[in-house]
Figure 1 (spheres, helix red, strand yellow):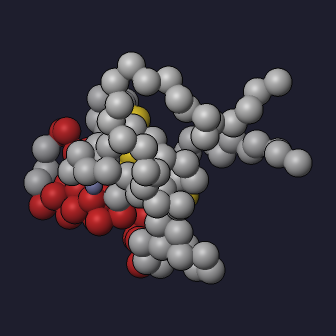
Figure 2: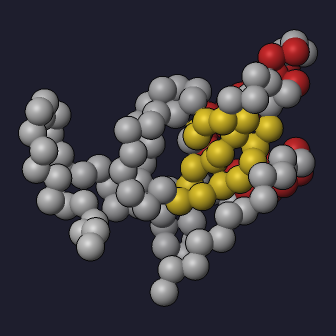
Length: 119
Ligand SMILES: [Zn+2]
């Protein structure tokens, strides 16, 4: 049974973010990589690695400019399936729970049989 619950997009407080980051970069139990949904000062949403959230927060604390002041964390989650999105900070790959899929960069090929069957 799937019961999708959309979390309310309420910005976390600095204390919430710190508590979450201090909990580590992986879920316990499970050991899945945790990612953060963030929104920048331009109201653009993005996904970031825990270490990048830490880095941006540190930069924001040191550098008192406006681009950092509107920056918030909206939530944390585990990415279950691979995505083509990249980290909004380092532009690195976002780790999914099941690791990178062995799909090669094939142009024009439409053999995506691994996708869910829709009937
Ligand atoms: Zn990153």
